[in-house]
Amino acid sequence: MLCLTGCMQYTSPERNTWDYYLNGASFMDMNEESKIAKRPIYLGNGGKILTATNNTKQLEYGDKATNDNMVSVQYMTELESDLYDALRAAGVSVERAGTDVVVILVRGAIMRMDVAEISSNGEKLLGTIARILRKYDSTYLEIAGYTDAMTDTTAAKRMSLDMAERAAVFLARKEIKPTRMFIVGRGSARPIAAQDSIGRLTNRRIEIRIAPAR
Image 1 (cartoon, rainbow, N blue to C red):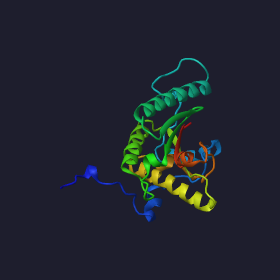
Image 2: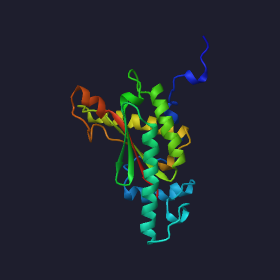
Image 3: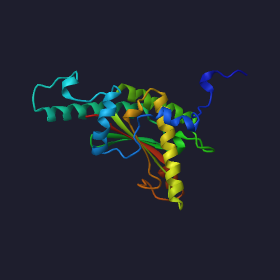
């Protein structure tokens, strides 16, 4: 029986090539200071800043800071709506955090159970996210991996960073510029569920935090 390209299992490229795909990404938390530091690299690689002056919906009132903020809020509201409509699946949620939008992807929804690799379902979900991020390209992305509670904190950090990097490489191969990315592995920090048998599965996750580039 012949199997066309569409039914092939996704496989991440060899690890020794990840630096190539992630060239320009920052391996640190995304905060106001790191976004300011990243801005010259972002702009130098064709990145666009979100302001009222380059927005098609011109505002006729208010000062520049107020208008820029209104444009950012509207832009991120539309982004949130598109993500919410496109990502209605088990193990996936879209949340608002101030101006930012956070996509939470439970590990079981996007990774294979038997090996550290993106699953067929994960390929579809991350592909959908990439499509929307290409549309809303005036944004920074923090891609953070998390594990459940582990005794070996070093191993937890390593595993969580592996998840984050795999997702980042996938997105980079889908034309999401790595100069938009902050990539971190936080181990078992910031649990979002109890550390029981069910909660542990929820705490193993990737969070993609999307912020307006300003």
